[in-house]
Length: 267
Image (cartoon, rainbow, N blue to C red; front, side, top):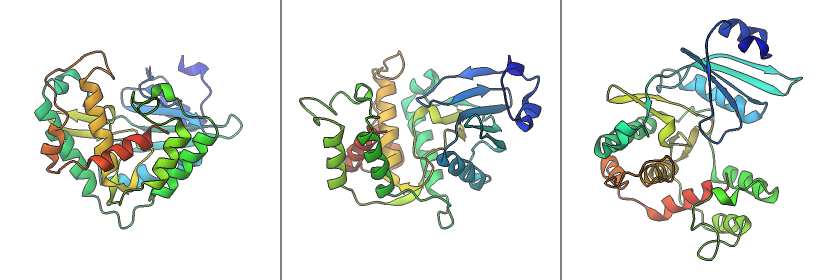
């Protein structure tokens, strides 16, 4: 029961008596409680979480994102509590949309163009490739990479010998960047749709100014693996993920797409 969990008083007052369910979607180690109108995310205190809250507040009125209701920390327990409004809609990996690839790709393209329309001149967070490679190196040197979760061709006989070999390749093959406002994890579960249009963007921990091809790459991979059954239990045999490029009106830059998919293997 909620009453048995130790929350900061402000958070507890806002959610007392409300029913909730636990959401274990995604790879995050956070505990997520889903209420009818709120979402409460509980995780270890980290500077990145402060940046997330700053970005969410900056995005209010710019994009359909959750609103920060309260943000509290329990220093003794080493935990932070983020209470935000709950965005309605179905994940774009829902069977309804996966069964309608042209409609889905059109909606994803519209969502991505909406992100790109955000004025980045005063964006409080700019994520450089130096930043990402520095964090990747920390993860590699501290043995934090789960190679079993990688693409089948990333490591092994036809790929890189190990995460360090991949990191060194990434450091030596940096692409030219095209800065835009980026979601940072533009994958189907993070894009919500309702009544035939984008209703919300969630999981905003990596938002900020970044390369436009990062979101394109991760969206393409997400489409591909939601269609081929790698993620989820159903195979959509008639789903061509390259419809996304057609809807977006761009020619795929496969060098950049592959680079960012490989970079994400280290996170």
